[in-house]
Image (tube, rainbow, N blue to C red; front, top):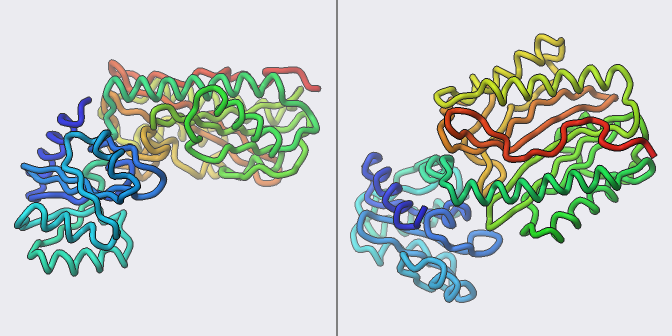
Length: 365
């Protein structure tokens, strides 16, 4: 989707919200609306009204912004504290200006309020206006996520052929990250998780110096990035036979994921989608062992709209991309998580990540 089309969709939202303009600072939102890739951190501030689009940045990014955001008037501001003032004054009188209430710090809001008073503009807090636009992907976005998914898939296949008893979690994590970067990924979207044995009971475990042993669960959570777009993929492996408990828990989680992938449909809320997998896990007796949501949106950010959880009112729509990641965690033993990045196409959920879901891809060594 061209930037001009995204601007038009945003302006329609502004009209519906009775806003004359909106101020954007969240990096992914700025990139989505303008095309400016910036760098880490808030390299740009945008002000979009019904008849203008202005991007303020610093000297370092000025020429880059002019090249990447030709639909915007680009201005250079050497001091970040001056950005709001110049943006508010360059457009003349703006009666009601929206700002991202869930992005600005208290200090930034105070400064913005002072500058808005000088410009005689009324500030209006908004939440998720651009985030909701980003939730529905176009074909180019889906193509980028698919490429990021492919890199993650091949990383799982690679490490499955390399991992062996005695390797530490940190060693496995480094081999995965090295492979992902060498095979075309931009900087990875999140720190890779390698959690073995009891550490696998921690949903966001950090790799440690713990040696991996045969017969225990090993959760791998990896992601790649292609042209700014992310993938998110988890698999649980076991070197050698995992024992009856492992096989039983693994089968429950796999059934919960397959049921969700088959049952989620456009028009459902995130809570209803979450409930499909949760019911399988609850009925198997592990109700208290699945404590996070079933999934989250994936795009320019690895966690974005829609939210797919027991408390989510987000509505699943065609061309939304999100994860489906049921899990069971048992303190002191470990855990099992199976996660795919998927997209809603033609009324059905289609996984974009396709790594094997065999728990024992290689023999113990």
